[in-house]
Length: 394
Image (tube, rainbow, N blue to C red):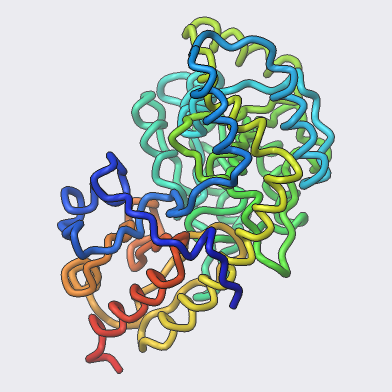
């Protein structure tokens, strides 16, 4: 497996106002002095040097005033999507939001009304349901089919389920969080047809689309024909480059009518982007940033192999094969244990904070989600801790 000092270096994040490390004791009861934080989806790696330099240049200049001229920033996004994803986008359709949870909330607010249904394909990223409910809309959970290894769409069941659900929008996670699926083109065409059959706005959250492992290829939903009039794309540099604290993201809307509605809502809320997020994104979407991402994915693939081998060696545990993201979805169903029991062993015996499966909706009841975007020594430590916590099964 590839080693790399940029990713192997242990960086102390405790007592830095870090959600992942400083919050795990309060939320999970895992002591931060000797626990492992494997829940919040950010990485324990520094961003590439080009991003750090962009921030340092602003600090060296010393004046933190209002931002002007988004031209270079928009061009960097256009270049990245064309070069990395074969997507030739119109830069006029780019809206900058305060992260993609904020982008999701703005889409729900703009394109639906209180009481409307919003479809989620579960188990799926928990923040979607949170903002839907907070906006007084209804979550409609369409549970994916699962054969013990792979999640797949179940359009026939979903058609019957949502026929009278009063849904106006669907949110697709692509690649999927938490199960790490990279949807095939045929599956994406199926999602597009589903949206058209039920007259739904299709919001495609593609925040993980740069973190795809060898043997798999991500297709952006915008490249699927016949969906432009109902499509809202969401992308960001934050997950790819580990700059989530910049709270920036892109809502990219091909259709002029949908674009106008979104622009009006942003204006009504008085929202404008954080200049640091724009500087960082512009620096990240560059040849230097691209080379760093390639090295990152190679390193994460090594972590994935190590974690999967260790977890799958424990009888009753199964790590779902990861095609993308750095979030391993581990099924404890084969242990025969209750959710309380396997969670207690993970948190109290192994001293690992991992996301609880039920927070991701239907289908997550027997799972925990582990963040493996950390130095490899910590991944090995996690495997050793889990093996010890479940040693009676071996």
